[in-house]
Image 1 (cartoon, rainbow, N blue to C red):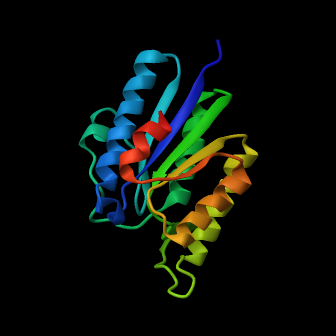
Image 2: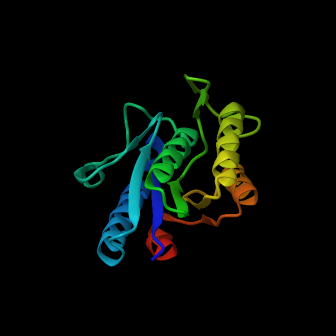
Length: 186
């Protein structure tokens, strides 16, 4: 029997508090958690919350999670790093990462040091944070892991960033509004 590992990366950044984004994302993460645990009990499912830094949300932590008002930035690179660690630890070969986010990276690591970078007004992106995140996407791809990105914003620079992830990784990229999220993932 082939088992799989799925890691849900749930954006906890400040902007997720807008327009019902976090509530929709959390509801879907909880539903996915219940679905996998009851229908596919041998599969592994992890949820990683990411804001300025990433952390695994275990047990009740997911149910009790809220967007992170004290660490408001978006460190998708850190989320992908933790996802790779969890997947490698599981030992499964059929793996995927589901990213639920509304924003571009604004926090990243260069070596062991955490950096925060606000978007460049002219480009609408945080160039160093995006570059570091794309580097992590390449590492995930080299390990054979697919990334499915659900972008809760239709801002053109964010749509383009999402397309870049999909182009590199070959995973699915979906631009949607919070109310559509559940149907699209399940």
